[in-house]
Length: 331
Image 1 (cartoon, one colour):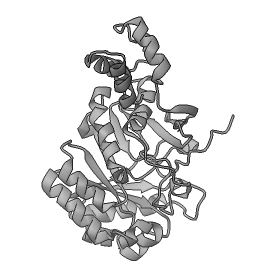
Image 2: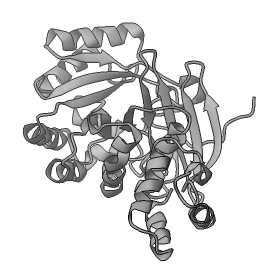
Image 3: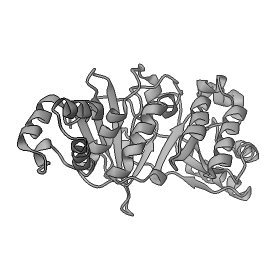
């Protein structure tokens, strides 16, 4: 729900300040309507129902993958499309991947979102409403700002949403922000944010020429500048940075490129997460299992803690890089 509108409506009704906290407590713990908020006067519940929509988002469709992953398509009040994903893991984790923008202005060539028309930044309430949608179904305990958009281009609203996440059941240490290397945002996050969030960098290439070809943002902030910002984050926060490296067959997945990546990174600062490519209908194919294994082995030889990400929701276009806000196809 629009928390600013909620507060203003309650103020206009002459309600005490604690009413907003009451409403948020119900919403953040899974209430599905104002009617369930039984410690609010009935007349107030009716007023809220009339003046403050329970969600700032309109659910337009939902799909469930064979592995239990759920993808939701929403529209904002001005009809901007966004998607969010709930990932269910066998160990009991429930992780939400949220969008911070409708579309993305940075046009990474491997990402379906980058092919969309950019709409606008989302508000903190619109970000939170993605989480609350899934919280009404079941408890959630992890979150990544890794959906549509570049979170660090919308940092105020991203941090505004992050501040509220512990109320929903997601601690700050279980909240991650992923960036393609938006250096001003990394710098602001380092200097201004006092929450112990995780930082992830989408790197995807060990040299500037290749990275610029697949990620145009590199023309603005090259690898050296991005890594310097990340290392300043580590120096101040003492929290290691997750390097995300998308495995593109015949593009960035050779043993020689693995060696260059190992030479580029400080293993005290970075952990490496190798990401199998998820089809987006574009120009790339994923690396073979053998190529991924060989790449990982080179990193291990150089002392790096590297993992291969478990792909979730690929069969409903909910996996990394696949979000494009398309209406689900009827079965």
